[in-house]
Amino acid sequence: MDISNPQLLLKRVINVKAIVTPLWKEEVTQQLQTQINQVDQQLQQIDVQGQRAITEIQKQGLQPPGPQTLQQIENIQGQVNEKKKRNARTKKTKACKTCNKYKCLN
Image 1 (tube, rainbow, N blue to C red):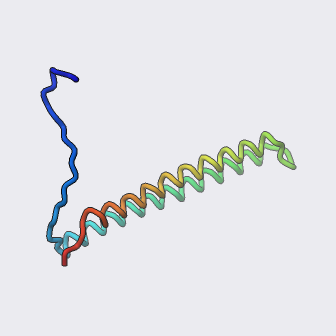
Image 2: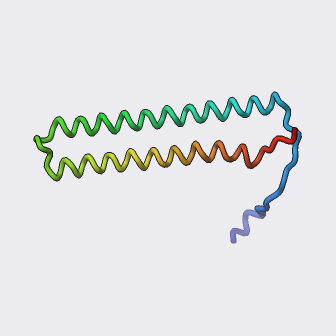
Image 3: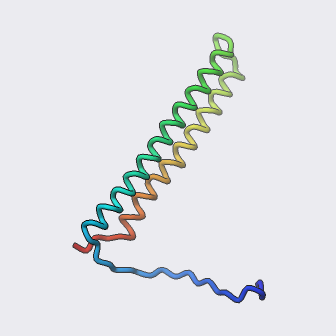
């Protein structure tokens, strides 16, 4: 333990009840929609980048593609899928946080 830092951090779950106004609810909804749209755009960019890379490899390769070319294509597809999964989890988390933390009491 660092004695020079006399701070203590406690983590504890607390329930907060608040009255959610329609204006605040609308603002939060708009913010979430903006973030979801950004994640969707990122997913589209990932798809386009992956397809470009695959097309470029296919142009350079022989017909029919050899095992090395097929392996490169599979690697790129795996990377694209992993990025898409990560962004999809981010999108889902953003949506769920609002539902779980800010419950409308109206």
